[in-house]
Amino acid sequence: MDEQGFTEWVGGRQRQLLRSAYLLTGDLHRAEDLVQEALTKVALRWSRLADGNPTAYALRIIARDNISWWRRRRDVPTDRLHDAGATSEPEIALVVRGALARLTPNQRAVLVLRHFEDLTERETADVLGVSIGTVKSQNAAALARLRTGAPELLSLIGRTP
Image (tube, rainbow, N blue to C red; front, side, top):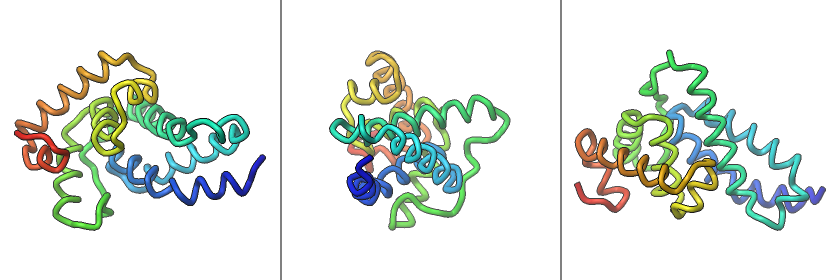
């Protein structure tokens, strides 16, 4: 294994992965666990992933593991958020956390990957293992929910209410 290459990749992407995981979960501790699990899986496959797109693979693991965890724990409210922010600006962090808590895990995953990670519909579909149509419908449903429940977030992601 190319340990130096892996270490450099982790150093350059760990914060991004943690931010995405936090936005998906709303829970810093759960996000940290997801990132650690994803980094372990990337490390085990580093020789095959190094020349490809290890970040997309890690995001896929984070998103899928989070959805699997959520399905197993449906009794845990999705609006249970910790005080840690996804941004250095407290007002934006509050808006983002509150708005994302209103979405289903699938809607959150699509919204985070499309609008915070700037992935295309195809890339988002590949990361989540779903069709482009599913990405489009989940994105539309998420934006519609935000339009009525959190219009202030739409301006942050470049949409108008």
